[in-house]
Amino acid sequence: MQDAPLPHRPAVRPPAGPGWTGEPLRLAALLAPAAAVFAAFFLLPLVRLILIGAGGTEGWSAYLTTLADPGHLDSLASTLALSAGVTAVTLAVSTVAGLFLVRNRFPGHALLVALLTFPLAFPGVVIGFMVIMLAGRQGLIGSITQALGGGKLVFAYSMAGLFLGYVYFSIPRVILTVMAAAEKLDPRLEEAARSLGAAPWRVVADVILPALKPALISAGALCFATSMGAFGTAFTLATRINVLPMTIYTEFTLQANIAAAAALSVLLGLITWAALAVARSVAGTSVAAAG
Figure 1 (cartoon, rainbow, N blue to C red):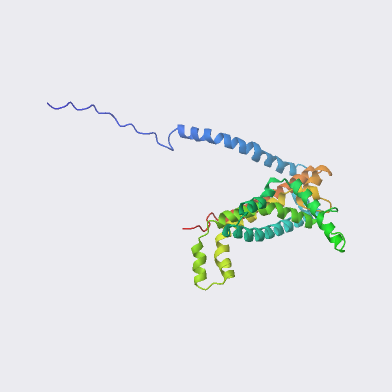
Figure 2 (figure 1 turned 180 degrees about the horizontal axis):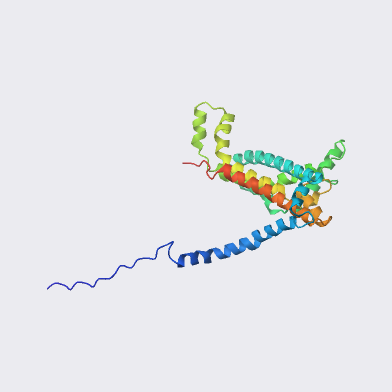
């Protein structure tokens, strides 16, 4: 006796992805919180800032007028030079120190790394105060130079003091990036270069630095952008310092020139955004890693 055939059941087809009417609604529901936060805390304030910059009597030409002001141009030039110098020195110091800490283990290694990253816990105002205690009128450096008979050396309230403060809080950020990238380097590449007779400086120039290039570019861009917009340290030391954040603060609070302050803020944001965008396009995403 043969079994009765099972009734035919039509195959149930899953709903098509892009054509399914519920999929766009689900995506919209998932993206709505992020879009709301982006619009409320980034897009709307930015648009409002741009409109304020053009809200004066001169309209949109206020941007050109603000940039043509000799005082503003001098402030911009000083800020760019300061940020470039801080970035160069920070990269040099952090690269040497980061490579040394990755390649060498010794008693107190963890403590030294912790001390080098300790400035991350300080706000800019505290760092400015530390620079004053070091190179201010009652600072340690001035007391030492006076005791040696060379007169009291005071530079905390100048560009030199601000440079010192910016380097101090920039090194921890860069050194952590360098150490993370250096740990992924393939030591066999260096061994191969040495076996072919390459001098130590050639190994550094032709193997190590090219492998660290993406990390150095990214860290340098962040260091430059941070130095361009840092305010707390400059505010603490601002006696004879002419940098763009302090110029914006002066225009907004002392001169009540809100349109100029907004225009300068937009300019500062464009410069830092351009630096980060160039770094992303040049650095790429890969770092030489151990195989």
